Image (cartoon, rainbow, N blue to C red):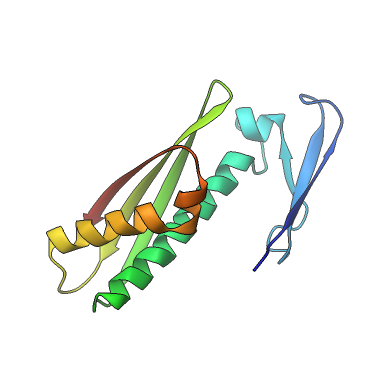
Length: 136
């Protein structure tokens, strides 16, 4: 399987602007700019897209692992916080809130840690990955 996205940029780094389109067109010329990346401007940015990819991948992997272990998750909600520090993306902090009937805290933490280590996006990222997992 291969997926793609296209980024277009016009102009200088501070005054220019760009857009990103994904193969599925879920993002279709989504705008991004210096301000959307480094300030609070309207639009997306690479770190936000990395966070979305990591949260989505980890959550799906966790669902798979829980199902294979005989659990039926009611809900899994994950936020990924990507940190950009001095021009380097250094961390992805995953924060998970889960509702899973019949699971013990110990088993939950074990399966969540395995999903963190083994989801394809975690394996692709060369950065520190942390996980805060809680049952609700």
